[in-house]
Every structure is written in C-alpha cells, then in structure tokens.
Length: 488
Image (cartoon, rainbow, N blue to C red; front, side, top):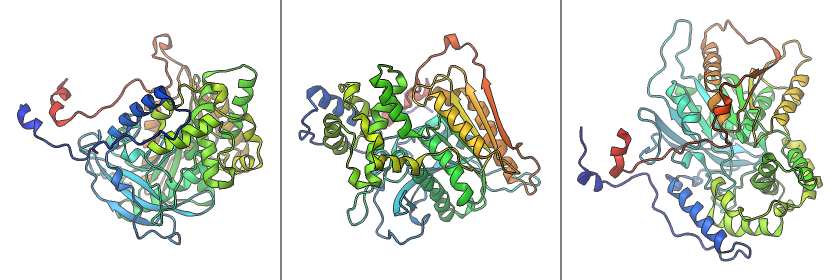
C-alpha cells in the first residue's frame, strides 16, 4: 500500500525526545573552541539517539533496606516508535534493586526483549522461554549512557536483536549508575566502571527482578553472555554463580573479556614510557583509564580521581559530566589531548588502586560452567595475550576437582574487537541454543565434557577483510516522513 507523503508529514514522532539546549561548559579551562564544537557535535548526536530519558528516575518506593532483585517499577510494554527494534519483537523495561561492590543496595534499570512467538512445545522439554542475560560492553560512565535508552539498544543486530529473533528472551541490565543517576534523596548513583563483580550483581539481580515482574520467566533456563566490558562481567557472573547461584543457569559466553584491568593499564603506561605505543596502548590509556579512575572513586571517594592529569580532570568534570556524554563523545572531547597527558602513571601503584584491583580481578577462580570464551587474534582493544592469560589462570584453578567445568577457548584469526562477534556468530548462536535446549529437557542427557580445550579458527579470505576495531555499519531510524526509504 502506497503511503501519502502529505499525510506522513503531519505525523508526530512519539518516543523520540526533543533536544534540549546544549549545557553550559564554559567552566572548563582547557576545552577550547575546537573542543567545545566537538563536544556539542557529539552531544547532539547522542541525545538524538536517546529515546525516553524520563524513565530513569528512582521510584519513591526505593529503600536501601530492600532485598537485591526487588522490583521497583515495571513498564510492561515499551513504546518502540523511537527504537530500531525489529517488527514482531516487543520490549519491557524494569527498575529494580541491586548491590554494589560494597554491598550497598542501589536502584538499577534493565530492558527485556521479547520474541515474536511462544516457544514450541517439544516432547520431554519444558515450554518455558529460553533466556539470555546480556551484559553489554562499554557505553560510558554517566547516567545518560543506559543502553536501554539507546535507539538500537547499543548492540542491535550484533547480539540482542539476533537472539530475540531466534526466539530467545533477552534480559539486559544497564548496570548501576547507567540510567538511574540518583536516589530519591538526591544522592548520586555512580557507575563503578571496572568493577566486574558489581556489574555481575546487576546482571543476576536483573534476572531475579525480571522473573518477579514476569512470572512466565520463573522456570526459564538462561545463558549469560557479554562482550568487552560485558565479557568481563559475564566472566564475573560465572564466578559469582559458584557461591550465589541463580536458578536455571546453563552457561556463559564471553567475547574479548578484560580481567586485570589495572594491571593492563599499568603495563600500557610502562609501554608508553618505553616508546612502545600500540593501538591497545591508546585504548587502555584513553577512556578506559579515566573511567576506571572514576570507578574507583565511586567505590572509594577518598581516591578523588587520583591519576587524572589537570586537563583530563577538567574535561571530565566540566565537560563530560556537565553534558552527561557517553563513549562516542568521549573520544571527541579528548581528541586534542596528547597520549602523554592522559594520566599520571603512578596511580596504579596506590594502595587504594591495588585494593580495588584485588577485589575486582576475575580469573584464577572457580567458575560455574560451561564457559565459552572467544577472542580475536587482532583485537586492538582487549589484546589476545590478556585473554590467553585469563583462560590459563582459570583452567589451572578449575583442573583439580573431580568434575571440572567445561571451558572452551576459541581464537579467531584476523578478527578485531567488534568484528569478532560477527565472525563467530554461527558458533556462539548454536552453542547458546544447544545449552538452552539441553537445560529445558525434563531429563538432561548430554553435557559438555569437563576440562579446558583451546582452538584456533582459521580465517578465510582475510586479505580482503575490512579490518577495523568498530562495527562497519550504523543502524538508524527513519522518521515517518522517510518511511519510503525502507523499501530500498
């Protein structure tokens, strides 16, 4: 049926937020005219892709005495007009309680992506929805950086849409401090970037809260999966599951998981001092370094951003925090800062940093398996050598028991940080579906063999591959006046 452009032009666009005025960043002493124009450009792009920031307010029924996983608010049916969620899929959002690294109860948000159809009933199997608890990669460090408020939920067809289109419910935590930014009394809720065990709490409590809000998920088997920051979170979840199990667990998938992040930053600073600068050096000493410093400060206020240079601190507080900017804008705001001005190298040796390191490092611990680990041999964000060390430490720690968990490690030749997800798609999707199907059986019959196995997946036509760290497409939403473009 042809649509009349005249009638389309009269349509409003519900679910898309009108852009406010650009915040005043004149207090910054280091952000010059170029920096300000870049900050404004990034802010305008980001805010145009936020759908409903008004949702992220802590309900008045919040109390620090509530049990983690308590439901504070439920949006049963999210208006998807401003999202790129594929037709047929539906979405809900919840606000719930979780706990931080210190055990403090905090509010957090999550989305639930629903498949188009009910599960097929199979003989000998439960008819419960299969589920994936998705742990997202780095989105930013401020409250505005909640993937559930992004038009494409951050990872779009790479992971969440793909899973839901396969009939799998996706429960995705935003992480504490991303989305909900303050308590009812005005106290700030900060994101403890780098504290993977805390974000693992967020994921676990999102599952518990989702099941409470939607009882049809009560018996759903689930796999935890995460990429980059989320890969570390998923790994921490597998460790958490040993001591604080969530019912229905069927395994974990971790792409490019970071582990000893402070140790990696310290090594990057040593490499810089020796003139051995790589893409990974820039990655660690840029956003990651300042986000971890801010994350430590959120856990230990007395740390007070130790390690930030004057220019980094000024732009963090007087630009990034003022405009609540996320990862895309971060790269623009700091684009004119030289690599030697990104941090004071000695901060990683402080007692507080080392305590945070000890409390947050994953690897070398008991895990609940099975665990599927995937890494790109050419990853410029999370270097392969760090993932290899993480896997080996964990294999060693889990090799002595009678029934060691299954740990499978696959290295994909020629793949960088995000392309890894696409290159391994058929593998991880089938692995997840197999785990969920087995867990749905009334009498499970086939478990993965225990122990560690390591594999290299040979690249094909890699000389022609588009080599880059980021995805090579941009998913956008057409306005009602531009619906005709979808035909192409």
